[in-house]
Length: 105
Length: 409
Image 1: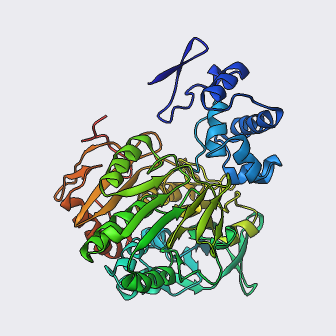
Image 2: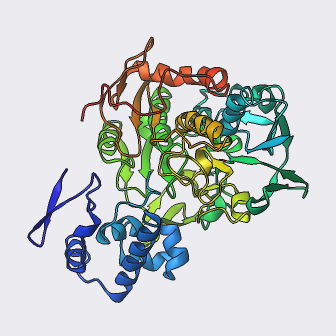
Image 3: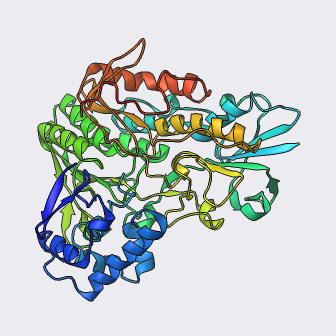
């Protein structure tokens, strides 16, 4: 399995480049992954989305789609694209340490 | 008398009726299937209609003709399912009770979900090819088109047959080349995905093929609205892509009756156990095909593999024995690539499409993720296989579980 080095730690990733082990994730790792992905500052709005995604994943075993994010997170699609440009659901899932949402098949 | 009710008489519903009716004791079981039309379309055929490869009459048959004797077909819309009362309410409010239910209501396009997509220009400069009408209108349009910028845009994943947008572009490349106007046509894929396809290795190989065929790819495009007057797609991040001809793959959703029943997710797909195919939280309801929320492709081959799993599980489950079969997400798709060639991909929940060879006793091998004439013939042959083998619920020499034989890791 491929690995990436984040904050000096070698972490396993899946074929999409998302963290393979949920337990490898923490908030510092998230900040670093976001920075590497072109989002230098994670604001409270970012964190609200990331935490919501992790909550859904914990409960259901898969990350929510963009449509569900819009419906349930209270943040509209346009704002989601400003927070996580070029694909909010898949980028937020990655930063949240989750696999790609299953809608992407 | 026990009632098995099957909602949807498409690929999945027809196959399950054909598999189960002959083995369920006719004195104990009545099998009923509900669909709102009499016509059964061979959906993979829609792809070829815009280019004159098939006419609509080549890909449609009477639904009844493919159902076994003794199975009752009710032609009606479905209002909703009352799962806690084991009954289905039809469009005219009449009631069908059931002991066991199989939901096979599929998925359909919903262009009205996108701002500006359905207006006066829908069917004139903006088309779909996922419906008989859309494919036919597009065929008429293409015949007279003299060139310009053609944009194929899947709006939102998941879609039925995720390779269809690519196939459309490959076939368009061949079609305009044969008409001698390829240099007057700009071919574009504008996609919400990060590349040509959903899985990394196939995305790279198919992306290279798009490049060789001079088809441009705009990845990561989230469509907010279509501006018909200016002929442009406008993204959520305000980026714009102009077009002369828009071939849209609108948002796909499960049947609205699923939403009305309170059984659907945000796209009206039913939460389904990914291995047993039982509806989550319901003991006497199975779900198959495009109607499920499973992380497998929405494609006929998936339905075929699932049908074998559901068949085995159903027969044990009704006798209160443990369900033996486990669906592994197996998918197997021919991809038309134009000029008499095609590719084949074979994958499941865990294993992405890989290159190599796909062994098929008596016919193959087919080459995986690589163009060949053999794959094209496989795709064409499939229409016959669909009507005569697949729908009849007969065995194909491809196992429901994916095999690693021939694949290069």
